Image 1: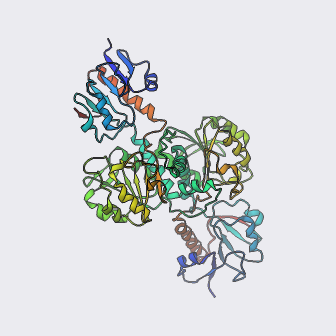
Image 2: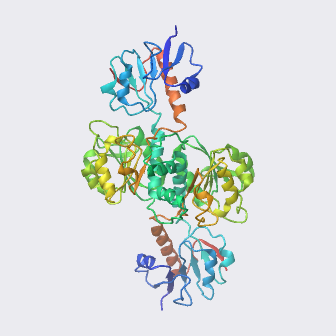
Image 3: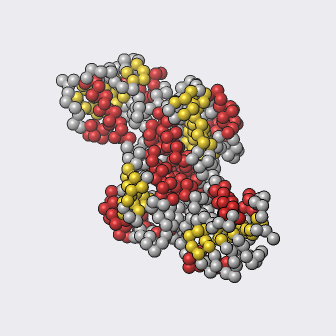
Length: 306
Length: 306
């Protein structure tokens, strides 16, 4: 009998982690199929699993449940009792910050326009605003927000950061959410990098959007429900605002949703963390958790216990 | 009679520069129309003027000809005698470096794929390589090359720079062009930021492209003729390489050229420097030249005299 029984969601991860450390038995099990054991010491969830699917853990006694996602909205409501849930800190933040810059630069430099024009062989020479000298308002001072701020640094922007409370950190001043009404009209680009919780759900509503400057760009690399989709659709359809988003509400966005084809909208299909380097970062985290559990230590990144 | 007669190519620039400094008379004249005077102390060329059009200055005695472009390939062959030609240093480099990052990030994160999928309302979730941990080979250590290097800094890449000769500068080591055969196979992304001259014309040929690693991305923010277009088209059509380019040869690229629609190709229509902030930077340079000439000093950025 091994010291540690570890379930991973696919053979690819098993192969990458093989051979496991001494005392660890690695098995493949994804929720939804017949469990291969009654109890796992560590269970790695599939990437992008929807919170309601966590009900599939009922009857299981997985001491530690390791997600491959950073956000854990909905987990508390759906995770059956008896589990410690750990999120994927340091796996996706850098890649999500990188995608935020990809969305910002593509939107500000006209890349979607050029891609569309290329179908017709059209040399669409025209002036786009660019990123230099733009005023960027960044909401969120956590892991993703920091990665966005660091990548914006060499682009000669005027960056203003906003968090729950006014303070200073190593990257400079942080304004409080209460100042948003004054800050929003001054921004050319507003970037959402906040967690989804009761305080942020629907925070980007008609009032928020109306406070943004005409022509400004809203960038969402947080979670879809932070934005009121109907309100955003109206603001973009009127031509008043532009948008670039990696997340939508609902997700996937239905094929006939007007946001897909409105001018000034760029949508990536929730690929913030989904890059070639993700597997390497995720494997590193699982190895760290195995080492901690073998040592009898608590796992890292535990965000809730049921 | 003014101390300085200055011609600018359009009313917009005249208005932005008005009122001019004391002693300066500002007139609007673009090559191709009847000249409004026989002699200008300073003549600002239209943006993106083709070198052969400089023949329109024959018979003029413009002491100083100020271009709005950085590259001046072909100028020596076409500029009539009697002129000092100044290029637009510090006007476009930052914006071109910014566009290089836009092209790199868009290509590495799948933005062209997402834009195309959006037409059909398709949620095209798939993994793209990303930029982090990629090996970037940057050719060119001048103004644009420096701006590219500075903007790549926070993206966690392995950057190798190449110039005419091996040396070190404040950004680190520079390899010599002679090392390219060894360096090219090791790069995931190759960025061209070299001037166009006899030594760089056609340097990216079949041999260069064959030395690149399968799946690698070629980024051209230099000049179209640095790349052998037919060779690049073959390399991309075979699926072996990807490309993102702001410049082509010929330019504009003809509507029926295969590069427009080949998978793995992203083309922007020579907009490297063409952003909202360009006018402000150009105006600043023209004001500096007026001040120098009023003082009887030589103009800045003079690159050739005819």
